Length: 330
Ligand SMILES: [Zn+2]
Image 1 (cartoon, rainbow, N blue to C red):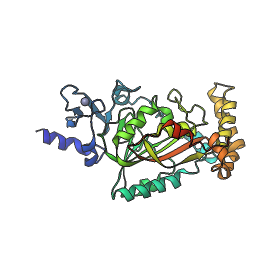
Image 2 (image 1 turned 90 degrees about the vertical axis):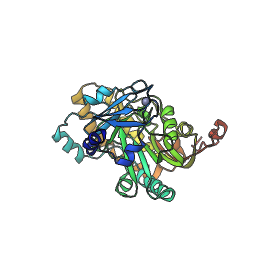
Image 3 (image 1 turned 180 degrees about the vertical axis):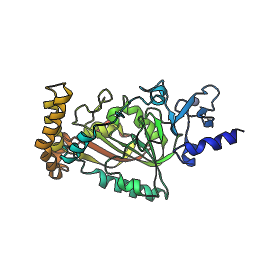
Image 4 (image 1 turned 30 degrees about the vertical axis):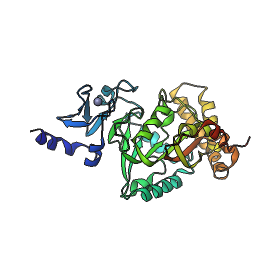
């Protein structure tokens, strides 16, 4: 009978059978079993139920998350505003240049994919904050050999699991790679999240992270931390470095400062929209300086965002070793 029920429900799930088998309880890491319309933890001392909404399991540990399962069952706005946008303003926005420019991500993802495919013929990659397509991820997304497991704390076109990076619902040593792009500034405890990333990676598994340094608040109440180049390296101290550096430069940081300087004059939605258009038209060229500046030493003291690519290691980088890695201009 239970088998019959599972047959009825499983086609509605957005995740593959293989990924379903890899899931575990985000509270106690015990096995999950699909029962009627919920996932149920099989640990008799836990027995937590996790509902499924529109084919997407909601695997949230409510004790450690700022979100509740109810938030997702009721489709409340969590990180992204899911309410319909004004199509006229969106069309107008797409016509004028942006002030942001990510110079390195495409090249970095190509490098990431190359190493992943040398470790495994069909690598599985967990994407944290993957409700929408990340910048530069096209080659990874289009590669049929790489299986992406796109998770987020927001429903989006690509979300297949709702989960929180503070308690990832996968067993130890599950993934060949983890991508965490423009996410760690939006979590309350980035160190705990990187601990979780380390746990779910296989030995020698790869992490790719991009995290802002000189960027103003951009997620409303969901924006908590920034990292210097060395602060970011220390966050990943249980990883052996493959590559690191600035991904968005100081030209972009300058444009953002100018933008937020003007925004700080007003709370009015109307004027903030006018400022957005004005800044885009007057400050978009700043980002082009970054093609020249991105690899300069001074950029490591002033970049808009940094990246880190590393391999899970059993060694921990000490703080004495850390300070020797400073490569800025001072
Ligand atoms: Zn449990």
